[in-house]
Structure formats: C-alpha cells, structure tokens
Length: 214
Image 1 (spheres, one colour):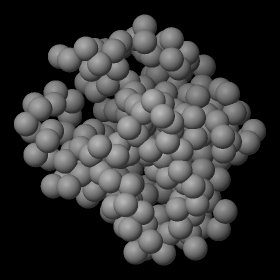
Image 2 (tube, helix red, strand yellow; image 1 turned 135 degrees about the horizontal axis):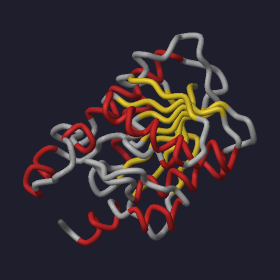
Image 3 (cartoon, helix red, strand yellow; image 1 turned 60 degrees about the horizontal axis):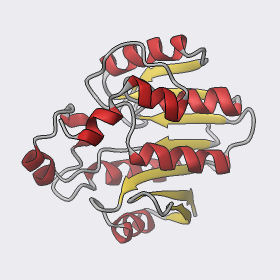
C-alpha cells in the first residue's frame, strides 16, 4: 500500500484532520484530497441549521459528521452500499453526530418532496483503465468512474437536473487529474445546470464546483 493510501486509512490522521474517531477498520479510505476540498467549500457555504444531503458518505462519513457538529446541520447521509451505511451509522454514534442514514443509488431513495439546501458529492471519478493498472485495493464502487472517469458524474448531473429544486446548491468534488474541469462544466451545461463557482485550493488537484439549476 502506498504511503498516502496508508495515511487516508489511518485513524490517527482522520482524528487529526477531521476530529473524527474511526470505530473500526474499513474497506475504503476514510477521506481523500477531494474530501478536504469539499469540507473547505462546505465551511464557506454552510449556515446553521441548514438541510444537507451527503451522497456517497462511505463507511466513516467525515463530511456528514463535520456538517452536523460544526454547522448544526440537519444531515441525511446516503450510500449505494448497505454495509457502508451500517458502518457509517456506527461512526455517527461514536462521534456524537445526529445524522440520518439511508441506502440510495444517487437520488433513488430520496423522495421528490425532500428538499435540501446543500448536496455534497464526492463521486467515483478514477478512469477504469487507470484504476486497473494501479491495482487499487478499495472496492470498485468507491473509485471506478468508467472509461473516462465521468460516468457517475454524468448520472448524478442528470438526476440533479431532473429534480430542479429551487434554492438547492450542489457541491460536486472531483480530481481534475482524472476528469478535466472543462468536461464537468460541459456536462453540467448540457443539462441546464450552471456552475456558479469553484473551490480549488493551490495545495490540491481536486476541485469543487458550486452548481445550481438555471
């Protein structure tokens, strides 16, 4: 395992960076560089008590914990994998964060009348050939973004466009070394979604697009 991969799975590093206690070993990393940029974007956008949906929270749910504890947000955390959601529930309890959990593939288990102020998503965006060549040891659902890395991003943007909820801001994170910003911007525009801003710290190749329906 590469050094940075070990750091991303380290309970000590997760405690230092997020103040989150990891209850048990996990099959996937607790966070990545995109998670850090999403937290930065969340802190810029959040207001106390806002309704937040974290899509693809994983087994620890560090962003959901951060939103609930720091911003007193009402948080719904989802993941496509039922075992990840089960582990996330243990993590939320261990860290004293009140977070609702639900198994959902994108918005499949989200009712049409459920409204959110912020939707956070750190999707799988690693191109399949790259991930296979690197023999990534996390579950494929965590990283595999298809041939060009943008398959899940396209599905997500299509689903966001179909919901068209006024006032909802989407924070979509991705690593620009795997999927170019121009690709994501074009996919958003093709679905009638406007990229209203971007968060791109100098220290990270990851970018967060701030997206709203036109």
